[in-house]
Length: 220
Image 1 (cartoon, rainbow, N blue to C red):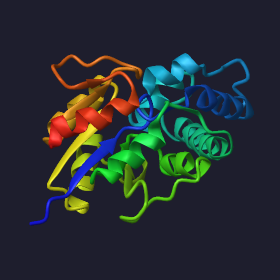
Image 2 (image 1 turned 120 degrees about the horizontal axis):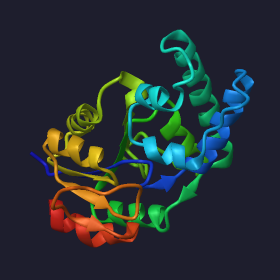
Image 3 (image 1 turned 180 degrees about the vertical axis):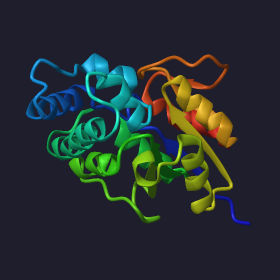
Image 4 (image 1 turned 30 degrees about the vertical axis):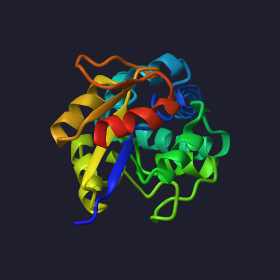
């Protein structure tokens, strides 16, 4: 079997920080829905990033009735968020595309798996005009909770199997990223510059470009 090594990336706190613009987008829709005394802050968004979207809605919208009312507000926020980010982007961590390009040159394949809603990863890639979806593209495959309602460990396994990877690792920034990667049976690299800490002994990076050195040490 031919060797094929892949690096699977988390989005928020690993590749970029979109929390400020997500907060702006969600606040617009919350106000339009009639909750004019409510807002969502950048800190609110950062505190829930990495969680499935239904859990985020339960956390941020306790003033709504659980069920259709909360779901409708959540879907409105999600859809506008995608539109807003496709136009306005977020804060890209330094060296992301240069590092991805170098990793591809080194023979690694690049993927993204997130707990985000459908269309979020596409909004990120669209804002930066990054081609994706084929072996020739910078990002070869993407998957998320919003597409299939699978948990992150299941989507990590799905992307690994779907792309025929013989070795792979996941790069993320919070404990739940580590937990999902461990459950999926892959090694983990902690993006320590991101939103959270990890209570485990694991390889770490303090800048994105350090992956060029760390990835070969983790998966060869």
